[in-house]
Image (cartoon, rainbow, N blue to C red; front, side, top):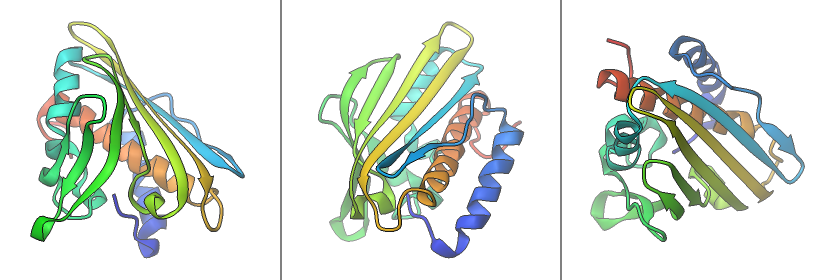
Length: 187
């Protein structure tokens, strides 16, 4: 995940448009305080929970937006689904990035990560991201929350909406991928 300062306004506008078009519900502005922020999102996906979980964990490289990777290639992403497992990205020449670390997992129900994404890694921050899946044979409710706290130069007021926009994009792409096989448009 990389934010480019010159295009942050365009990304926020684009994320807002995606929210309207993709049908994610339960959005609210991020809760921002002087010491951190909380983003909460949810979506209903017309697919069994097992299929949503497999896409979330095992097929992340097929739906994650490559603009929010260091390599600009989402197929370099992987999640090792066990406590201590890495949500990592391979980089050219043997390099890599640990985006987040799995700290709690109940297959087909909950995965919780610890860490900070993209530009947040360069600040004195800690984060907790939780993906919770509920539902059954035909429909899955996905709740995504990301709480970040600590110190960031300039405060959280500007970065929190950008993070929310990026995460909204990812959740919408997951929904479209699971329902249509294509993370960028309905079929």
